[in-house]
Image (cartoon, rainbow, N blue to C red; front, side, top):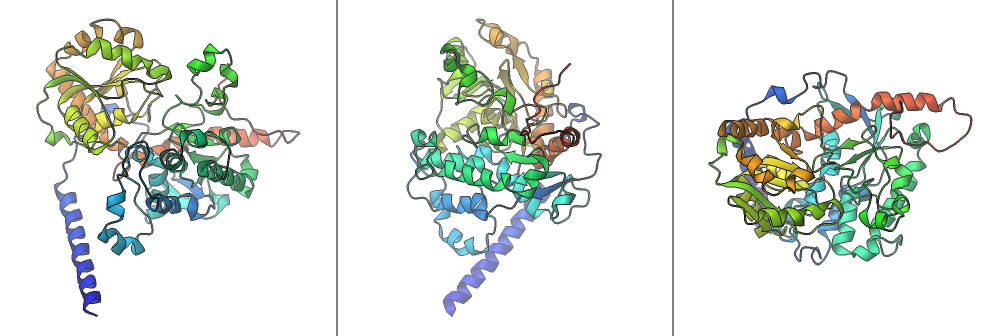
Length: 471
């Protein structure tokens, strides 16, 4: 009896402390200065809320998958550690887990950047006051504008890569590849549903931000709206396939016929570096900073060339990086002390590093000829980021001289602009979720046009995704 009273008192004390902490945070949290010229004035949700129906999938494909992750033994074989193991084996987690209907998304730095799938679903389920909201969940399919497929595809893929093996990940073997088994079951369930039969999948939304999410079934869901972080792992030509003359037949890239800005949405990575508010900004002592892998594949081969050009330049820090706790802390210090943060392509044109730079108020220097960015048309990236062609970046001395030409006044203006857009890239407590749904809303006329046109077809040919505007 005494033990139960002790636990009850402990619970009440912790809940009171938590409520007090939230209140203090709301009162004291610095507010970034808005910068309206960065935004399209016609883009701020001047329409009815988007009505979203959540497809019927077992919990094991979303929140249950998180529980499976936290019960895994051993560590992520790519990190050598399990960043979430200590936290979720703690006394407090065991005490409260009974009451946690929605487990937290992992802190693992290889998984956390792809948290869009978690926050989009959680936002729908926690939104108890839809008045004035940009999106509302509906329980009747006939009332819905779009259908969200609640599968944590990125988490599923990363679990297989981290606790399985890359070799098995590529194979369609349900016994050895848990991710493939889940992909297969999700697609079979969804394509057998009345919702899919009604639209051929055109109005379905799959969140697959990780470039390898839904790896084996991507052709089957091509008509749907795909929420991705970029198209780099999708339809860009694989260098090795090109060299062998069979790029169009490569099974290692998603073809342009399956992904397109016309029907799909680019979503931001979830940043790893904590947000720095403009009121917390301190004088910066480094001109240009980069931390990450020196060698990457495909378009990321530019990194090694840039490294050779820049590593000995005064005011430039080029650091090999790892995603352990020490590496993240070093990256945080480096970004918060730098005027500019270099963002060359990796295995895909963009990475979490861009959004870490924005969170750190470090002016991004984007070196890419084929990058796609979230919320373009709503945000004007040229007001807070520097864009450099690959050709110019690889011209000796060009990049450093260009950055040194920025006046203090111009750098300060860019930094204030960064502060004004930070909330667009915040999933928890920010505007990222609402803005993603806004981008989905903009696809509705195209979806409806396609559905109406399909009614006059004379056969049962499978729907093809819209990928180009013909002239």
